[in-house]
Length: 210
Ligand SMILES: Cc1cc2nc3c(=O)[nH]c(=O)nc-3n(C[C@H](O)[C@H](O)[C@H](O)COP(=O)(O)OP(=O)(O)OC[C@H]3O[C@@H](n4cnc5c(N)ncnc54)[C@H](O)[C@@H]3O)c2cc1C
Image 1: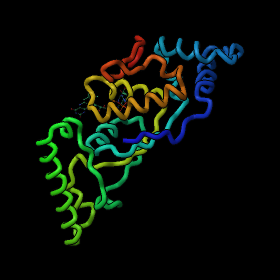
Image 2 (image 1 turned 90 degrees about the horizontal axis):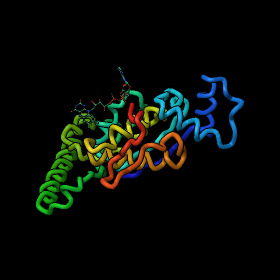
Image 3 (image 1 turned 90 degrees about the vertical axis):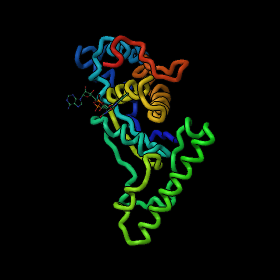
Image 4 (image 1 turned 30 degrees about the vertical axis):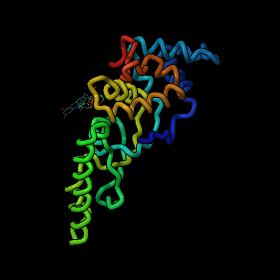
């Protein structure tokens, strides 16, 4: 899987501070170092709407349709996904879960199944079946590509929900990578979210998540 940052609000933390200070008419207190304390204070108070003034866009590739189906449930994100109607899956890859990859008999079984599915897909296309119908035989393992845009408040929400112990491994891997990028670009907005020793995302502020 690859996670690439395509775009992010320029000077995101400055924009958030300026917006937040409008509530208190304290713009006069803006200095080179003021954003850090101010943003962290608002997050710890649960005043998260100010985070909606900054956005980021990510391209995620080499992720299974099983996982993209979960991600697109997040209604406050915007998505564009590789279409199985317009794009042929003839050369498409499949994502193999680690539990399968590490078990030789399961891996053989899995590979037989996806190879068979791909063969049937090819045969259906040769029989004149349109791509949108031939794709019905493709498995959840089919590799996909998706572009996700969201504001920072929603990104925090998605990261916490999908980075938790209860979330699925592939989605968790995706949000962990997103979190690492965001912590680098906007450290004060994501200061209270971190990856623990078990590789789960752990919020450490009382207001994370909402
Ligand atoms: C571990 C796990 C297991 C899951 N299992 C299942 C499952 O078995 N079956 C299933 O169908 N789904 C399942 N889901 C998906 C889950 O139910 C949500 O649909 C999905 O995670 C989107 O979450 P959300 O609604 O909080 O977030 P978003 O859609 O990203 O929305 C963000 C927030 O905005 C607010 N919001 C958005 N829309 C509305 C609205 N219409 N009304 C009021 N407030 C709104 C809410 O506060 C929401 O939390 C699972 C999710 C997880 C993390």
